[in-house]
Image (cartoon, rainbow, N blue to C red):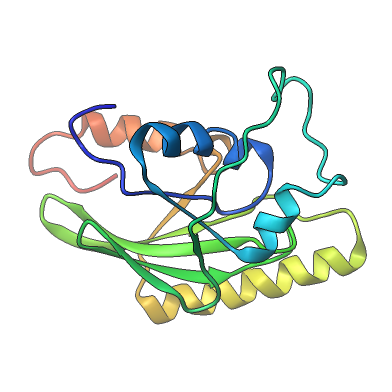
Length: 173
């Protein structure tokens, strides 16, 4: 690990591509692992099939040390993380809001924890209700930046490149 100490891994939902490296990071750093109780259960359910291409050497599950729910707030390294319960993509997905800074200017960033609605009509209804709930949560928190956990969804890789190439004094892209 680098010079910075990893304080926590936040697992937004129980799909392998989101919890898959958490156990190794936890083992090497001793960090906390944050997740909803429902999706901790979901990640271990037999119906939550782990694709062989992701788990060739078996699955290591992290030891979840902190459960969050709607309205939970945690402080890591002086930064407050605010959590919203957003099921739909998975039964116990969470999304979060926290402050970030651009040249000293504070912004509130929102991260939607589970992209893609499920196939069932009931699941889609839950997903839509969660999205509406999280939108209000973000507005109440004063969010002005959104970020996706999958960079191909919101073009965040391209956005980060524009940010990297920004000249002194130029507006945030």
